[in-house]
Every structure is written in structure tokens, then in C-alpha cells.
Amino acid sequence: MTYLILGAGMQGRAVIYGLRRLDPEATIIVGDLDTEAAKSFVDRIGVPAPMFVQLDASDSAEVMKWMEKADVVLDLLPIAFTERMAELAVEAGAHLVNTFYPGTISGLHVRAAEKKVAILPEMGMDPGIDLVMAHRLLGEFDEVTEFYSYGAGVPEREACDNILNYKISWIWSGVLDSYIRPALMIADGREVSLDPDEVFQAENLHAVTLPGLGELEAIPNGNALTYVDILGLNREILKTMGRYSLRWPGHAAHVLTWHRLGFLEKTVNPALGISPFDFMVKHFEPRLQYKDGERDLGIVVVRAKGRKDGQETVVTDVLIDRRDLDTGLYAMNRMVGFSAAIAARMIADGAIAGRGVLSPARDVPVGPFLEALSGFGMEIERTVE
Image 1: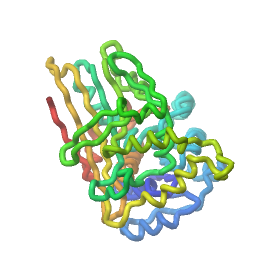
Image 2: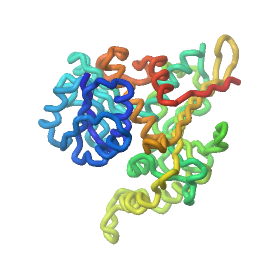
Image 3: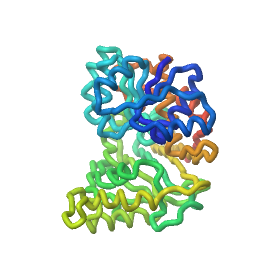
């Protein structure tokens, strides 16, 4: 089996490691403009080296040449390339996995199905693991009246040494982008829309307490309504539904201040020569890095309330991962990269048989996927009330 990994950053390195564990005999090709850090990573952890190729993602002809050699492509490039990579994969007849929301990729469904190609977006941590966990949990209920999904990439408490209680284990510009989008959810049976600044107001937050960690604040995150139908929820009886990011207490108040003072605006400020948003990216990025020996936490929580086995029940599933100091991979890298690697392997061996544009919430076999995560040390803990 041949896998093409596009993007040799931290997520790409996690995919290399994951695929070597899942499919030791596979041919792995890694393409990026700069592959030196990935080569050093492979040498340091001692796994068989993949084939590294210098590849410019904006050169469609060159990308197509390598896609035609692959059974499955894993797109870990910046989001600006997502749509084009999916189009090229369909044209090349190669399956593709990425970690972003579907967006306009959904429009490729018919073409991909006709070419017998699987395109699987959202196959990371959040979205990704959360959707598979939700699929399992919701399938156990007779009916669901409340559903909550939480995701977080935060420092361990011991590593919280700045006023934001936050450090970077993901693309910082992507984190800030997530802070300037509206949120849609269901509350008291009604659809609710929050503007980007409203998302961070105290009245729209709630507290979540997790065993061994304590209290975190839950911040509305994106469009939860997209998943009502995908997850098979009944809108007629659904009273509450939302997706949330978890942060240590106090983080949302700082982001709200950034909103109110215009620090997240993308219009160029003539006095600065860049936008306030770009200033925030450049100013904070070097100041929010993890030190050697510090660990991050990757957290996914799904919680449902309703009738289960004829009784009113609340079930909460929690998955927490930590940075692996031996490999250096952050929990975020592990949860995103290993999920994508597992899905790619499942497509390659036929465990994921659907074709067209797929969803982790309905097309990824739950048992085998969670078993593979467990093989990487990621275990789900359940509480029932």
C-alpha cells in the first residue's frame, strides 16, 4: 500500500509515526517544500524513513504526478490548499483524508463516488475523534434531548506560566481564526446564533469539571447545527445541543478584550503596515511556545442526555491524551495525526468502504477506530448518571 503525506509539519510527523505503527510494510511518500525537520524527527525516533520529496503544493501538475502513485493521500497542508487537493485526488483516482471541515469539498461527492474515491474530511481530533465518539454514544440512546461536544488543546497546569493559561500546539493563526467565527447551537429548543465577540461573553460560557484536571471553561465553537442531521439527532425533541472549546478559566475574558479593542481585525492598519490580526500572530507565536519537558493536554468529551434502555440517563465519555516526551509529539499532534493515519489505513484495507465525500460521524467503523486509538494509549473513560 502506498500513502502520500502532503505536509511535513508536526501533524505530518505524527502521521508518519502512526502509519509506521499501523502498516509497517507500507510505502510512505512525504511531500513538502521543507522536509528537513521531518527527516530529523524520523532519524531521532528510529522509524524506517519514508521517501521525502520536495513538493510545491501550488504546482498542480507535480502534485498530481505523486498522487497517481498513491492509494491514499493524507492532506495536512494549510487550509488554503484543501479544496484543490481534494479535486486533484478525485482526478487522480486516489482516496484522500484531511483534518478540516468539509466546506466546498462536499460538492465533490458525486464525482468522487463515480470515480470510486473516498474523500474523508474532518478526520482529526476536533472534528474527528469527537464525531466517532458521538456516533458510538448516540447510537446507544433510544432518544436524545441534550448533546454536548467539547474539545481542547491546552497546557498541563504545571506548564501554565502566562496570563492566558495557553500555549501553542496547533497553528496559532488557525486558533485565532477560530476565535473570530460565529457560533450556532440549540438552547431551550431554539436555534441560537452568537456573533464572534458574543461567543466569549461570560453569559455564554459554562464550566466543565473533569476528573484529575478540575474546572475548565467551555466556549461555544462554530456551527453545531451542521451535525444535527449527520449525527441522527431528532430536531423535534432536541432541547440543547452545542460544540465547545475548553480552556483554563480566564482565557475567554482575554479573548473578549482582544475583540473589543480590535486586535482580531484583519484590515491592514496603515500605521502598523499589517493588520492587528497578523500582529497578534507574529507577536504571540514566539511567546507561547512549550519548553522542553512541558506537556500539553488533548481533551475530547461527548455528553448526552435522554432515554437509554427505557430510563432517563446522562452519559459522558472523556478522552484525555498528553504529550509524548520520548517522541516530542504533542497530544494535539498525536490525536490529529494518529486519527488521520488510522482512517487512511482503514480506507486502504477496506474497513472504510464508502465512496464519495464521507463523514467520521457515519462512515468510520466505531469499534475498530477506537481500538486503534487504544493501541496508541488513548483510552475513553465513561461516567453514567
